[in-house]
Amino acid sequence: MSHKLKLKDINSTYGSHRKMSDRLVGAIPREILLGTDYLKMVYFALKEFNFAGSLELTEETIIRQRAVKILTRAGIYINLKIDSVRNGGSPIDPIPHFVANIIGFRKLPATILPEVEQNVRTNLQELDSLILKYEKNPHVTNFIATGQRRPTHESKIKIDFYQRCLGERDSINKYLVEELENRALLKALLSPGWDEQTGRWYESRWTKPYRYLQYDNIEYFDDEKIDVCRHRLMAAYTKDIPRMEATYASGNKAAFYEELRSMLPHSTVFEQLFNKYVPALPGIVHRLPAFNELKQLMDGGFWIAFTALALTQVEGIFSDILRIIKPNQNFSSLSTKALALRPHFNYETRNFDYFEYHLPRLRNSFLHSGATLGRDFKYIAYDLLYDLHYLLLVFDELEDPQLRLQNILRNEPIEKLTTLNHFNYLINLVASLRNRQKKHPGDTNLQQIMALWDQFEKKQLAPSGRLEYFSGIINSTFSPATKNMFKKIKSAAKETGEHLNIQLMSLKKLKTDIAHIQQVLGPKKFLFEEDYSELYKMKQFVETYKAHMPNCPLGINKSLDEFKVREKDNLAKLYLLKEVFDDD
Image 1 (tube, helix red, strand yellow):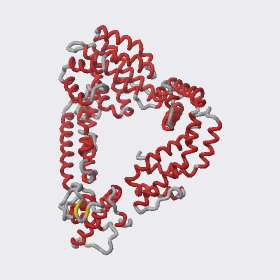
Image 2 (spheres, rainbow, N blue to C red):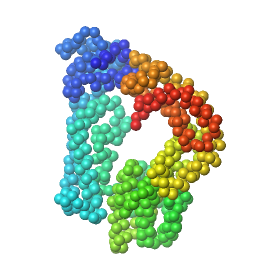
Image 3 (spheres, helix red, strand yellow):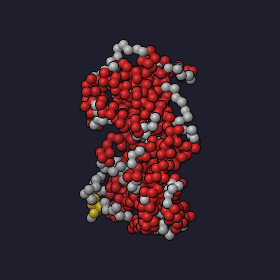
Image 4 (cartoon, rainbow, N blue to C red):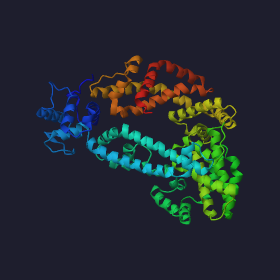
């Protein structure tokens, strides 16, 4: 049985209020929390405090007296009246004040629940309508009847989107059964003004934590509404994007591209292709002749020829990226290549639908049949030029260790290697690529990158003095910084009536007490996160550098080996505390 909340520990701080609210919401019976009886809520809440004597629900006068006592200690009541900055209830009724300010319900979950449920069921009805539409499509009806996909791109589109809808319907139904009440409770606990501060995104995210209609995301489920434009608007101001998308959707591509070219001219696109992406991205250099040809075709207005060549280059860039990420696999089409890259570009789902589903329609009809009638190839060429630019931008930002290490090594890495964070990031990249090299020993691109690293480590990093600098910082600051953090944690715990001396705690005791430490620190954890992060960077440095630094000066190795022995316990404690501070 958990200890009662002590009246003497209640104060007017946010941490005290948060601790009480968390405890009370977890202790009050669920049916009471989701009900409308204020008095019952307060009654069950008061049972969690260390008042002397028993309490019955019929003793309303005593319930009110105890509520007033807690409201006063919490700084909500001043001279038996509510603080002017608070709201809810009348100045003489502590019951609604207690529910609002101690339990934390600014609005009862019982009143929120129907609103949330209605919104979710509306989404479900809209999704059901989409599913019915797909189930009338011959590609889908054949798939339902036979379990087989017809070998056409249109069949793939309809079935893929149909299956997206089915999966989302399952998620929403599960949410209705398992999560709706919890979401109503969470929403009831939001501080006043929270919705206004964080906007519609937060409201959508927390009352509808499934994909459908989050951020107006209907195009992910309706194949007729695939976004075919936004990926070209990286240079546009956010406020201008909806208007420009509407211009594109209306068919007025002349006006759309007149505005886009004022932001990102064709000349700038080609300049970036030649001077930024070709030198930096692995495998792209062999496309230089094709890019030169594309520029000549664009300048000369040879739109059909530009379209034919650009389509092959778009697909080719997907191939170049896949050669890095999945070096031993082959992919037969633009559609399958875009699908294979999706897991590596989580934030590009909206844009990748264009490349997986929409663009292959043009590729298949034009390159396979040569159909040209009824098409304005000038603006198709413009589309493809900005498609290429977007893909190379995404390629350049790919969070793949091979690409990241190559870019670092080609851009004056010593000058930028100024913090432990930079160094640890670099070493993590190298470690990841060493593991990849074991799996793909024949990958020549990877061999070249690792050869660049070996040369850099020997000729630049080892003799640069950076390691001596980092070693000196660690040896002089780690021990006092660790003691200082543990001291601050001890003081913070003491404010809540807890004794928490990590400095003197054994590793065994610390390991068994991690959950308790998480509970004690609670919302105060953020006060120590920066200290912990800096210490953990030092720990990571001393434990990882040597494996990838064979040319490190021997004096540094000796100094840091001695450090690891001297600080063995503190390093182990930092590792155990990772569970407290690491939200991942």
